[in-house]
Each structure stands twice: as C-alpha cells, then as structure tokens.
Length: 151
Image (tube, rainbow, N blue to C red):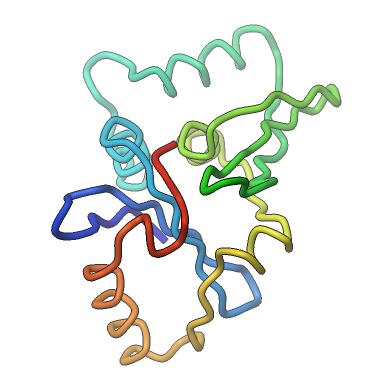
C-alpha cells in the first residue's frame, strides 16, 4: 500500500495489504528504507543508485532471479523475511530491505498466515470511510501498540 509516517514520533511504517483479503500488515521501518520504498513506488530513479538499486543491478549482472519475498516471522516485536531465488537459494533479510528490492524487481511479496494472524489488522475492503479511519488510526499508534520495533 505504501509508506506512512506514524505521529508524533515521525516513525515510518510500510503498510502491506493482503491480496484477496481484508488484512493490512504495518511494519515499522527506518527512514532510509522508507525513502527507498517510496522512490520505487513512485518510479523515481536517483542520480546515483541506492543500495537496493545496486543489489538489483548485481542480481541482473550475475543472472540471478528473485522469485519471492516472504515475511516469515514475528518474534519479540521483530519481523523477519526471506529472499527466495529461482535457484532455490533463500537468504534472510530485513523486511524493509526485502520489500524495497521486491518493488524494484517486480517480485511478489508474501506474508505468512501466522504473521498476518499475529500482526494483521482487518479493514473491510473497498470501503473508503473505513480506510480513512484506518489512516487516522495509524496516525495515533506507536510501535509499542503492536509489540514491534525498528527493522
């Protein structure tokens, strides 16, 4: 869905939405990763490649394809992710970095049912007033409300 800023602490949140469902997954991230995700969503290309752009270029140069990003776990307030490559190799990653890379490569992002059950927030789909209430809700929550911390 995008990146929002939690007030009053100005902490960025990346907000993932369940496809075919009504759950949203808020993940607190750092400002650098928030910028990288926002740039990718807006199709912006900086004059010099950001780290995630460089990683994408390296993958292309060595002929590796990123086939999936998985948000796999939530332990003690910390989210975990994996990069899954066509070769079958899986690499542990911070969700914020994995999402930034997925947006650059057009790779699907999957959240485990356990993570969505633990941290997902159900909002009725396609109801503008409900989505607006959710946005207002995001403006008033903090990472401690979800037991999450910076990635």
